[in-house]
Image (cartoon, rainbow, N blue to C red):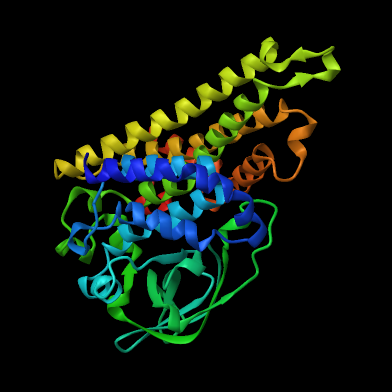
Length: 391
């Protein structure tokens, strides 16, 4: 068994435990530390970590397969696992010194993030001065560094760059504000930074990221680190939603096999042809979303392995498939929830939690369908589409 297969096997063995802890995560508004520790022991967080730092440098499909499995047991755990698990991929693009600063003493060090440029970043000698508040940093309680997005300004206040900044835990505080209707267990709290200096090598320009030409490729030259940020990060949001819908599907089918519908003179739900149609439609939607992901990641890695520039039409198609995949997952979970009966409304049941979690994930900015579909349509109709618009 390969190391990558061993991770999938380890994650699969954990699913019953993660399922049992799903309500605990929701009640405490945070994924249990024991779950994060257990996932780390499977090697999950090493999947997208570069081999230069002791990682597995795995194929993205392996990573997303693991995420889908985790989210099918607990939506919040799947969400945190995905967004925290994808960060080693981005750190691999940072200057080598930044990678050493994070992984040198402990290759298992984890990072959370908040990319919306809501704080201030000023260009100063030797680096940047960072100040402000960043929201929705999922899993931040389980991380000791954070990646923050910021528009860099000069002394005149003019924007000169857009960067991701790497900040250690000692330079920020976590404000516990996460109290939501869905994804309650993600602990997506605010990060507060008070006028902190960030050295130049702890910043990564989105200009470089967009061009797929980053300083970290000096030590991490493998194909995994030559695929677009907008492709892998967008699917890191969609995949847990597909996983939540998969968990809802499994819970729904198991429940309907035993359910008797009192309103229909004792008819077994499993014998209802309309219920059968909904199950078939939901299964088809989930299969379609997943097959598109597999195709897209396979083609991206194929170009990267061949040393070829990723074609713009492919980048546009990946974003199209990503937002469509989210929509398909939401449609699937809605079909199932609508046919689950009144008992599914009770707090503590998996179907209602998956339904709330999936809809909470849907509101993430990367899931705006109109923006991604407009870009694809523009490209198909011969209009220019700036690569940086694909984020």
